[in-house]
Image (cartoon, rainbow, N blue to C red; front, side, top):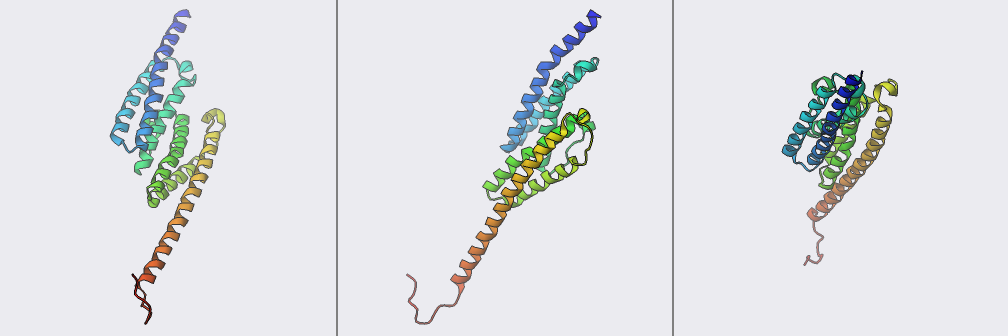
Length: 211
């Protein structure tokens, strides 16, 4: 019995730093995506992937330890990094089987990845890329719509409902920002057209010439 507990503790001690590495590398990868440093993001994701696989392997013989929570958090952060990169690039998000993670971790990671798109959408609005921001908003909306169909107890989804509620709040704020920017863009175009029409209009006979 004691030998089994010792082995489980050794596996836990080996997996904990690996899971911390996954969380750290995944967070850095998301920041790199926001900064448009996609090569750096890919390298960081690769490091996170290697650490995650090592942690999963260490904990595989000890399911009770594997389900203690820290591996789930590492998987969730890894999915968030992969999902953010895919959504920003307009690519399909890899599924849980492809990423080799638990479904609950994948669902929560996907929800948080969609929330990360708000920052990227605001960056595009600041540069005047309204179309790009609208594309990201549509991706957020699609993810939210899919996650809303997942109706299982929190004990099975690891509190997904609360995460989806957070995504809804982020989505609505982003929708408001994009709508405001769209109205401002239309107003600006209308003003520019009016000014151009005025400049191109016929002159008034006898009116003094412009300096």
